[in-house]
Image 1 (cartoon, rainbow, N blue to C red):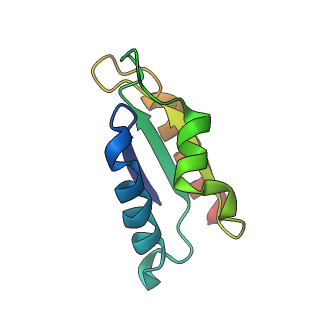
Image 2: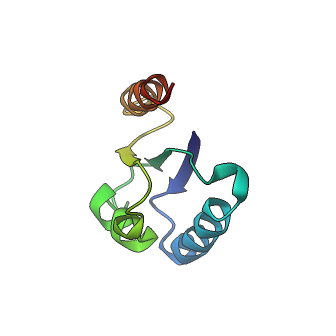
Length: 95
């Protein structure tokens, strides 16, 4: 599985994040990897929400890949358990 963390408060670099994610997903080793996207810094007032990040990263175009997006705040831990729980279940089901 692949965990990709996005700074939801950094609107200027979200396109760079999209390019990096696209490049990583094209790697042979990650061809069958499930994708968990953590949308971090949700505690900040101008942070983009998960739906906005989904759109900006083009996640809906990943039709052949199992992916999940989770809003998080790493400093408080909000959302981390939920995302990792999803990833754990996906990896168990792949075996």
